[in-house]
Length: 440
Image (cartoon, rainbow, N blue to C red; front, top):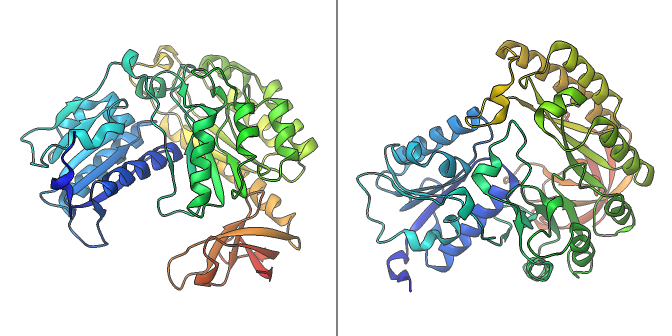
């Protein structure tokens, strides 16, 4: 039994790096600490506890984690510092040696953070609690909003794919999930708390059901029946797991939005083989075509990695032309980063950093062209927009069903409200369309 008396009137700050799944889990950690008596520190207030939820998808991510830890230790002298997440699981001893770190928790331990805090007395050296990869088995539920309008529902964790460039299976463990019944209950609770939109998150969400004998399609159908939730969005889903029946169901659904995020990683079949991906460009193109046939206005975001080992100039040009041919909306471009222990390190051809940068810039420019053209096609349309709370005095922003960002004048009463707006021209920054509210 944990004695929570020591946590009464304590304050905490939370810092999250990486994916939406991490943000969801951090928010759940915050809920657990709040229930024990720990409130979130106000701006400028020195915290008693610092929690850093880390990412390790690239070397840059590792560096950002270390920088964040150093910064928080400096900003909150004397605070009890906890580091968890993927970087903590993969490099626990490295993290433990960072000055000021008291506790390092692995993937299996983060859900039990409260039990590891002890009396909150600073340690001479970071105390490490992690599990071996084979022992990362439990599924920790999470459905959290934090400071956002949208709720993030964790439906799955871990990955069994072991792509040649990726360390996530080593950091997160095997694919696993909670039951559909538990997901539905969490969605109902989100609706009871005023949530209108839920994003389904996970490491490989299309793999949902391995531990419960269910399917992702079954989950989508069950969540669609939850009253009170007006919108669902499916976060990153592998193209080989995005089935035609799911695409068709989303097209018919009132609650599942015409918005997909699908990792491509390379538009060259030879590079996809080197990456050990489980599809080819023909399958990917077929999925995009299918989506656009039944949802012509669907927003489709695509992940692309440039400069991976083995990506020759010829292969990159093939990938570029393939991506340019796709009717997609936005590219999320990542430069390949060497990750210790991955099979990609055995591939001989190495792309110089300056060439990675050049290739990234070309794809980012292509992305801007595609996004701007997609937005421009919708100018003049009247669409529902779910508005989000901005900083005081700043314009409000929200999103249409197909994820077009819309800007309207500030009105505090419209936070988390659905309005109908006529979409005008681009805002000054070119990041959103100006909206004229026609129906509150």
